[in-house]
Length: 299
Ligand SMILES: [Zn+2]
Image (cartoon, rainbow, N blue to C red; front, side, top):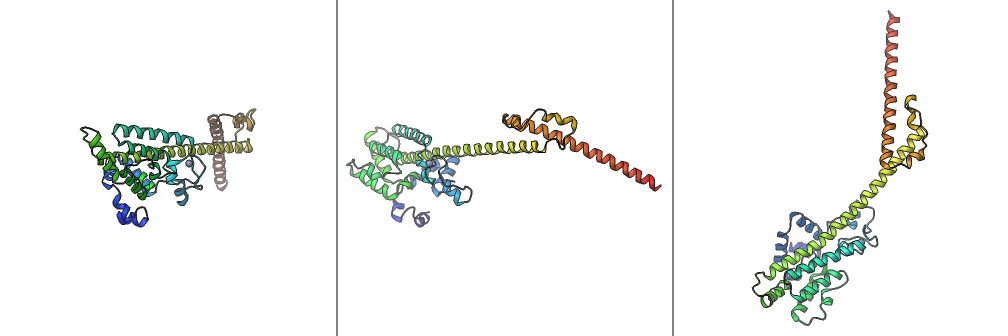
């Protein structure tokens, strides 16, 4: 694992040592099977963003299907500027805020995390904590910046988070049974859920668009069939069934509701089938008559 991450350039051998792997493992263990699968895909970059879909030759465009303003990478899904995506991110951040209050989070860490959730794509931990003079906080933000912003959202946080939280619980929260590590595990789980929820709604938006395209295609297909039926006209329809076109022109049918168009097409198909059946019965009767006639001549 260590060699793999260092070879990929995700972490250096120094920053690998700084990551709180214990809290990360604890967080993953407390998540559902589906959430764990998602987290593995997300962290490894195999989550099916547009950039990846183009690389796998599944999609033609790598533009974000939500905002349409830039290439959609795994990272972009967390920071999409589409209005729906933004308001959902805001709501998720509010939920994160509530969780931190309920879990007696160290006030400086609390503030820092909220700032990162709001502007993580354009800022750094050091910049968010520049007004804080606590040397322990300074050391934390420097280390987390070394580990990296993307790694933070991939659940790789500095071990200093849990140390600071632990101190805070011991000094300021009387009779707290929680440890800094269990708080850090909960915080990592919240980070994963914050990203997962954004991915889920992005996927819903993509599927909704796919369904709309499929529907338009189906409508076009139906219209094509109707036009073809009108160009074939009465040929292949028995005289008794020709009323199906009575007083109708192609526009009358094309302007109907989609379900009504399908009903009309089914009706036409049925009368054409009836004509084909009748024709083949007639041919059979003729063939039988000819064979009998030939036999009679031979005798
Ligand atoms: Zn976008």
